[in-house]
Amino acid sequence: MKKVGIIFHPLNEAAGNLARELGESLNTRGISTWLCSAWEGESARAQVDDTDLVLSIGGDGTILRAAQAILPRSVPITGINLGNLGFMTELSVDEAREKLASLLDGEGWFDERSILEAELPATSESPEPRKFYALNDFVIAHGEVARVIYVEAIIDGKPLTTYKADGVIVSTATGSTGYSLAAGGPILHPQAKEMLLLPIAPHLSASYKLVLPPTSAIELRVSSTLHSAMLTVDGHISTPLSSDAIVTVKRSENTVRFLRIHPDTSLWGSLEQRLKGKQG
Image 1 (spheres, rainbow, N blue to C red):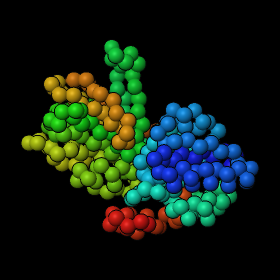
Image 2: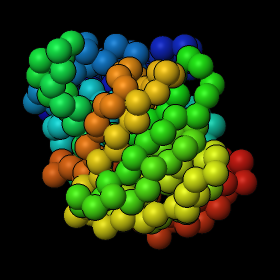
Image 3: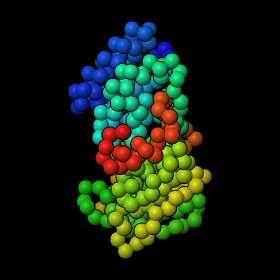
């Protein structure tokens, strides 16, 4: 490897210190590095070209921001956990110091994850169609006023139902341990390609959760309403939706790759530990 990026949580002092420590260590190995706050996505995105690996220092939220900086490129990510659950992270702080050299020497393996792609059509305010990528999920929910919204769901061109709910989640398998799980969705194997579609707190409307094949196209139409709605991407990118807005979601041809050192047989054991609130 010739170039490594380090993205860290800016409010975690330990994350910043570790980023600088690892950067200096990599430089002594002759590897070029760049450091960036996870909250400065545009700055990180401008430095990603020709980067061989991105180290994400923080928790799962930091990884989600790192992924947004990378996409649609396929630069691998290795997460170092300073957060709480760390479903997507790979290394503890001590392991980062001990095992990073092994990763750089090619001893790791790639964990490839499906992502979602959403498109908003052109409008008078936005003359060009807008495209978004999500490693975890897309959420359509109410805006500032806590009132139910109406979202019509159409699958592969065929009407499914109109949700009357706080919102609707479309999740990847990676995101199935996130907001989707809190909303009552199932846990999918993280390398699965299926998508989840489920409502948030439905009121007198369909409440079932759907597992959809990776070839499905999901069209979500926000029905005319007096209350605003928002599209949220991976929990930190939000854009307002007008009445009658249409969001089309499908599995992207792009993926996110994690560079890992632990054997993949450790998945279910670490998942059980993290669901119980322990550090794995």
